[in-house]
Length: 287
Image (cartoon, rainbow, N blue to C red):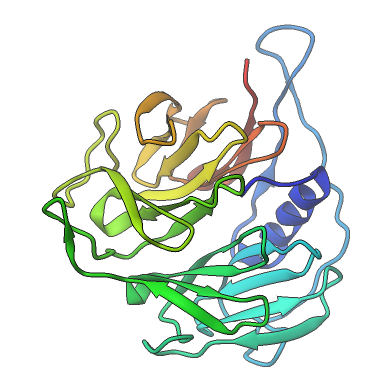
């Protein structure tokens, strides 16, 4: 997702700390260039407020996983163990929920990532059911994508998809089809466009291929960023899946990663990486 302003970025960071990743002590550090090359200074994030506790009642969480926002600032949270989506006001007041465990339309089996388009439609990566579900802002089911046919001789059925992003300018959808070690590109109405990465479902550390592709985002120019949980790097592609560059290696130093979990781009082009194995956030900017 591309944050519309710094406020959304800060809210996302706060939510990530206080209930999306409650079992970890994450260190948020914003590495920005100082006066001398190679020098970095931390920028503090200030706590604002929190909500939620463990439980199955409205407004509580069992294993919250992802968060996103609509045009009104309402907050949507997926919960992997509750198998539902909860909707809150910007200040955390519970509004509604939808979903239950199952495979029927509107049900979930480990709902992972959430995306919201410019029309406030909600997209949920339903990992355990190998599909993407689309809802309106009131949680009413619209459609799903889980086809199991072959296109150009390639099986199109998802294999435990984990993340997705919408290019808000074009409506194009990009999905990390993790079990198949590939990226799938769909039209806003779900027709298949193309894919890249593995053609046989086998992970690889080669350039342009993937080893557990997990997080994905798109910048204002349409470039697609993908992180791999089992390969400490961020790969960047154009909107047709052509490799352009990559950064990151294994380690604990600045610019190095250990099991990078998510990547997000803000409206200024800064790249935020959840460096899970090193228990920190790293932030990069074009230079």
